[in-house]
Amino acid sequence: MNKYLPLSKNHQGWIRRLHQKKYRNEEKMFIAEGIHSLKEATATSSYPIKEIVIISGISESLRNILPDDIPIYGCSEREMKAISTEETPQGVLTICRQREVTFEDISAHSSDLLLYLDRIADPGNLGTIIRTAAWFNVDKILLSPLCVDPFNTKVIRASAGGIFRTEMFQSIEPELLSRFAKKNNYKLIAAVPEGGTPVHQWKRSKKDIILLGQEASGLSRDIIKYADESVSIPGKGRVESLNLAVAAAIILYEISKGYLPTRDYYS
Amino acid sequence: MNKYLPLSKNHQGWIRRLHQKKYRNEEKMFIAEGIHSLKEATATSSYPIKEIVIISGISESLRNILPDDIPIYGCSEREMKAISTEETPQGVLTICRQREVTFEDISAHSSDLLLYLDRIADPGNLGTIIRTAAWFNVDKILLSPLCVDPFNTKVIRASAGGIFRTEMFQSIEPELLSRFAKKNNYKLIAAVPEGGTPVHQWKRSKKDIILLGQEASGLSRDIIKYADESVSIPGKGRVESLNLAVAAAIILYEISKGYLPTRDYYS
Image (cartoon, rainbow over all chains, first blue to last red; front, side, top):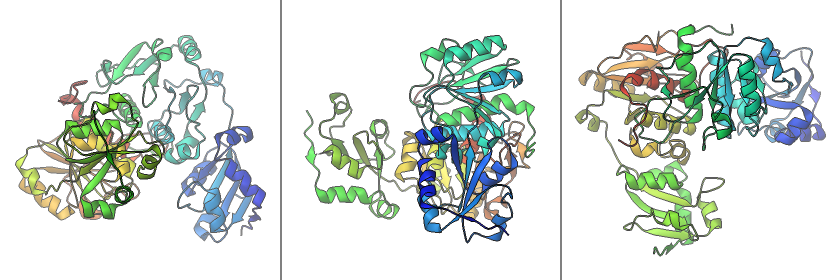
């Protein structure tokens, strides 16, 4: 039987401050909400769990997935509502440690498909892209400076566990990306709303980095100038553009589908 | 020069009530926010504009796109904030009339690809699906009972103008859909998370209706039992599932791409 530790007012205040990017980065922590995130955090080793906060009267089934070696704090429903960012909290918060990964760590690996996101502004879009990348087995995502914080609670939520299955490399300047690509034989492929090779006619190189730009203004000139090729998504154009996460998904699908099984959980 | 009509307190209250489904349906109106929606509403005849509300001091460039024959109300920035659902309103609200379209109206047309959405709960997902459908030239969307209201302001916003380029058919029971499909030679194709034909190997019929189910529980049994075939999206499965709007987009892309130009605005 788990005995929950008491959650002080000070402690609650500390958790609430983690809703803000500034404090998350100072503390090098982030909050993942809900049961699914707890399961993913315990099943993977991407981000070590610091502590878990749970509504004290929660059901037995949830108790069974709580790890033995991590501090677990109990709170009331009301307290959970105050520290959660969800309108209807599921009753469990997992607080994880951010991990520092440097850009150079990539070189050692040999992923042949990477994603570079240029100044993505919407946390829902970033989270959905992480989720989709995880589905298509893209396990490394590079972020430009000025991207929304990948440890924002809304990003974590929209990633549906994907955050625990992908590595995030932050604040990568276009110029650094270009040098990295040259050195490691990656081609830089710009996803553009029009004028690129239709993505279903485009042929992959051995190693590619797909570049996706900000919701409103697309890829910046600073990054476009380094692109080796560009791709676009065909469409009849009754609307001006596709949603960014949708565009990312279509491109990842198109260039991955030949290599993937229909379904193969957690391999 | 446009002279704006004064916006009374009562009138402001009436607009705020349109944020609620109940009042929208009583009044048969909906709110589309922002400049892009105003342009789309004036460029199309899908939903007649009842009135426009605008911040009085707004720039000349916006004045130029205001129609002459529709009442235009002026308000302060503060009043706009109170009647808008956006955190940072763009300064213009277009209030449109909902239009009653009956299911039988479809038969007369000959769309060979329709979309049926079963109990979609999230307004962002529904709006994004409408946007994507418009991009891929699917101009009719069928909604089951208990779907989120397509005239919800968040749906309209996420549709990025797509709402004005697609027709919505609401509250269609699975049994009615099945009879309609049989009578008009449509096949019903269920999108399922696993076990269906990989969508890139699936061959389209002459006339198909793609069935997409609710975020958490997927397609209900009531509709699955009528399906002629099922399709799935290949994936390595580092996450449990794809976001619904992403799954819809991948399927629409895959089955449309052969027929579509790279870009062709507003044809």
